[in-house]
Structure formats: C-alpha cells, structure tokens
Amino acid sequence: MSFNSSSKRLKLSTFKLNALLSMAQAISSDMKIDDIISRFKIMLNEDLEIDRVLFYKREETWELILKTNCPDSVIEKIDVERDLSPLTDITFVSTSQNNGLQEFDIIIPVIQNNVQLAYILIADTKEQAKGVSSTIKHLNFVQTLSIIILVAIENLRLFHQTLEQEAIKKELELASKMQSLLIPSQDSLPQSKTLTIQSYYRPHLEVGGDFYDVIQLSKDEIGFCIADVSGKGISAALLMSNFQANLRALFTHDITLTGLIERLNERVMSTAKGERFITIFIGRYNLNRKSLEYVNAGHNPPIMYNATSGNLTMLTEGCVGLGMLDDIPVMNVGSTRITEHSKLFCYTDGLVELAKDDKVEFGTQIIEEAISNPQSIKENIDYLVNFQLFKDGTKDIGIFDDVSIIAFEVFP
Image 1 (cartoon, rainbow, N blue to C red):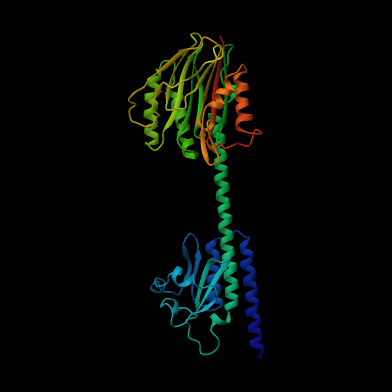
Image 2 (spheres, one colour):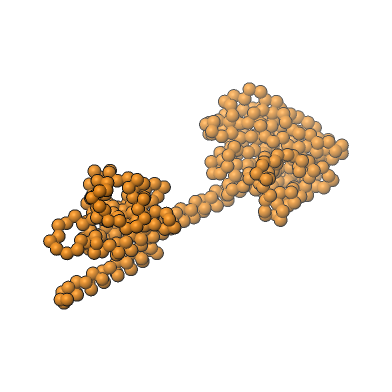
C-alpha cells in the first residue's frame, strides 16, 4: 500500500470521526435544524461525493427535509408509504423497481421500535473511471450519520417545543394573576352588622370563565352578581374580563336591573358574536329596606335559606342567558324582603356537576344540607370546600369545571 493511499485513508477516517463528533455535539447545542441539515448536505455532497440525496422524515405525515441534485419529476414518482415503508433494511435499488427509485443506488431506513422514522435515498451520479462507488464505500458511515442527524433534529424539535410550552405556561400564569386581581378578595367585600358576605373561587384551569363581584352602589345599597361564561380557558377568561369592565361601568344606583341586563346583553353579543354566552345572576340589596330584587339570566338558581322557618327557596325569576339572542323577549324581575335571619347562596355549576363512575351527577342537595343549619355562612362554605369537594383540601373528587361561590348572611 502506497504512502499516498494510506494518507488518504487516514484523512478520510479522521474526517468521519470529526464529522460524527461534530454532529453529536449539535444534539446538545443551540444549532438550528436548518443548519444541521445544511451541514449534513455538505458532508454528503462535497466531502463524500454522494451528490444525489433525498431525506424523508416522519412528522404527522412524511416530510422531505433534504433534496440535492434530484429533479422534481423524479420526486413526484416516489410515494413514501407505497414505495419505502415496506423496506426495513438497507436496500440496493434494482432495475425492476419504481422509476423514481431507479434514480438512486441505495435506500437507508431509520427504524426504532418497529416504527419508521426516516428514509435516506442516496446515489452517486458522477462517472467514475475506476473504483467503488461512493454510495457503497461510505454506506455504513452515511447510515450512522443519518441516525445522528435524526436524533439531533428530534432533540432540537423537543427543545423548542419545551421552550414554547414554558412560554405558554408563563403567559397562563400571568393571565391567572391578572384574573385573580379582577376577582374581589374576601377582605374587599363590604360587611356590616346586618350583612355578612363570603366568597370562594377556584378555576379548573389556570384561568377560568367564572366571575363574581360586589359593588357598593350607595351608602345603603349594594349590587352583586355571579356569572359563568360558556366554555373554558383563555377565550372564556377574556370574555369574562371584558364583561366585568362593562358591568362596573354600567351598574350604578340609577339604572334598573332590566335596563342593565339589556345593555349587558348588547355588549356580550357585540363581543362574543354569538359564539359564547354568559349566564348571570344579578341582584340589588337595600340594607335599610331589607329588600332584594334580582334577575336570573339562565344561571343556576341561588338558594335562599330562612333560618327561622327552615324554608329553602330557589331564586329563578329572570330571562335567557346573555349573548344568546339579540333581543331578550321576556324578562322578569324577582323581588323579596328579607326580614328574618337568612342565608343567600349563589354558585356556579362547577359546584353541583361532579363526574362519578363515568357519569355526571347534578344536584343541589350538598348545598341545601350545608346551609340548613345554625352555623355561619363562612362555616357552611368551609364545610363544602374542605369536606364535600376536596377530601384533604386539595384533591377534588370529580370536579371538571370552575367553582365560584358568593354567599350572604342577613341578620334582622
């Protein structure tokens, strides 16, 4: 063997070793996928003199991520599922095969756990006076390099996917914090000697479509509501945030509940375009007259408990939900005087719809049992949250929606 021949082989071996090392390092670097493919192309075309290459990679469908020196007319003849998926080993192309495949020398499959991940088709189209074709000479190296390339691409894809997920997670955390600022805290709720207000809020996801609010309309009058947007997630939360802004702007001491509901319905129709709707229970309570007037717009009926008589009453007077119709055809305003010790419990459907044994159970019995006793409304809510809904305060027993509660205890 001549010195020149030995030197050439040593140089080639060194190149291959360095190439494998370089591509392996790319797996843990911040190199872009296009850069990795470009480097792979240079190695094959220029360094190994394999000038015709097709590299198919499985995504949701088969994707051609690299082609060199291959006319579109040839590519159009190749169907990966039909022509390549039956191949599980390195295959030398014969003259009897598909016309498109005949333009290549060798097909290299990359398979893991019986799943085809990629196919690399290579050919040396240059005329050689003597010697072994580059596709044969470097076959094992090309196969190894192809596997490393595939791992590098997948690694980068997962890396960028993780970054995107982290970004989405941070955005959701920020949205959750912003939404929590819109939900009144317990300390901000008005209290008096004759009225106690308690609340609870737990979104099912990072952000939710539930909302409640209490507004001091005058010295002796408060307005309040509890609402639920159809659907879940960011879009529901955005609609609810917009709704709260409109409610705060419109709900004044002077406006009637019918006028308020009509104007809110216009705003919801304009914003949601009929794709979502909002159910809401909205009320106005006068502490001096001890009078309550309300509209239930398609919401779960709040439960009134008279502690003196023991009677339970559902507050149902109202109309259809907001955003369902351009014009609300019928609207009834309910009214009652609360002259005895009573509790008013308002809630969203996440509290009464529980998944159990692949079924959804609905019922207000747990609420009725929780408030029908001498305990305070705060103790009633604590009981529901800690013992009925969450076995240890954190683990739910089938809750699949947001849970919100705004409750009032009126003293004579």
